[in-house]
Image (cartoon, rainbow, N blue to C red):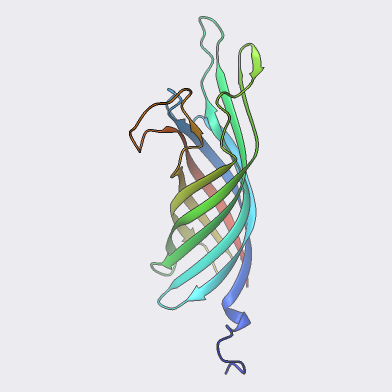
Length: 190
């Protein structure tokens, strides 16, 4: 019995760590495919809710961006690197003994960015926005009470950079958007 009504018992809170790899692309850069590889890692705090739900709040570092393959005719290529610190807020539903689904928003701060081609690094025009707001949806499998694996899609809701000289009035096509596929191992401390 809780001695202080209105205060949640500490046993319903757990911490954990997450690390993985990701493939990303940027919609609106005229390239296709999740060709830019990156890493992600971070920590989170989770709170158990009724009916097989839980809510987690985390902080993680993630590498996003875009990349083209080298053109054999002229050795041209393109690479965009975007490094973020993100704060996801995810609602998890445990669908059974091992399967779970997660969804929720995340807020990111751009730590560094660069663009380069076969000539070298160049100035990003227009510059990337300092903040990113994105949505997440994922599916995971729990091996036991500590270890699980998760596949997650992370996509920008607002553009990370407007088109240069953009006059486009279409709300959903106002610039470039991150799209990321993540595969992570999660360790829950209980």
